[in-house]
Amino acid sequence: MCRNVLVAAVVLMVVGAGVAAVGYAQWVNALEPVDPISDNTVLVQVEPGSSTADIAAMLEEENLIRSGWAFVLLARVQQRDGQARAGWYELHPAMTPEDILDKLIRGEAATMQFTIPEGLTVQQVVDRMVAQDMGEEDAFWAAVHDEEVIDLIAQWLPEEYAPEEACPEYELPSSVLEGYLYPDTYTVDYGLSEAEMVQMVLNRFLQHWDEERAERAEEMDLSPHEVVTLASIVEREARVDDERPKIASVFLNRLEREMLLGACSTVLYVQGRFSGPVLDEDTEIDSPYNTYRAADLPPGPIASPGQSSIDAVLNPDSTDYLYFVSRGDGTHAFARTYDEHLQNVAEYGE
Image (cartoon, rainbow, N blue to C red):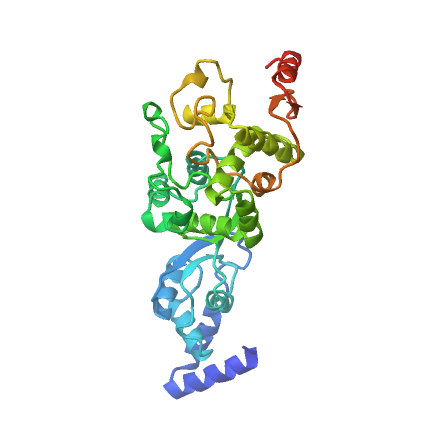
């Protein structure tokens, strides 16, 4: 509001109320910042249903305004009483009450940002979210097991799908959401609940599974769940982006020939590990996720694949490769026959 108009309106109000001129002077002084040079940020919450008086009392208690009554009067004079939006806000003592009121009415809520990298398990995602101060561990685990949250992708999941039963002796904490917590960077309003954040992450996944990808999966005779499952293995095996379509082709070729996938990453998943060597005895673990013993794809994903791994499965390179081995520098040597593979193993020491 223009200063002259504001002053005129206040003068009329003060005169009409029979208030002494000193009252107006105090009010004008109360509209100054608490500390014009402060750079201290204060995080405050406007509760749903809060009145302007409630908000003013909270702001005064947080030392963000000089006077609660002056803030209420400002809102009434500007005819913006009751228009503040609920939410969390970052404010500071250098702001004028009018600046604060503007921000609350515009709903410029404080935001938080978190990142989910590619290739993480549900366990790792929860650990990362807690480490980033995004919420409480128990609440996140409750969210990834919540039926309403799971319903977002329930139509994708096989009946009686229970990844936490992959290998009971290891007592792996998991969820049917394994593989579906979409890797990306998210900006959310401060105060969002753990369940709301998990829902947002799942919805981001669904947004990226567009009609073109769905049609491509159908052409390949793969369900969306199978695509995500294979993509999760590609994600954990690949280190170089341009090798993902080639690695996907190896696994698809093996599936077509009814060969075991033999992916070390699935053994690590069964053991609750994310790295390290896979020994011969490890490959003997009795689990549907151990692709050295179990035929076909595992029951579900072993991690959250990024979009590049999903697209690699849907658009693999055209090869007749059946084997690959790490060169130790992030790249792989590929082979068409077992003899060629043994030569590569001998050369690169795996």
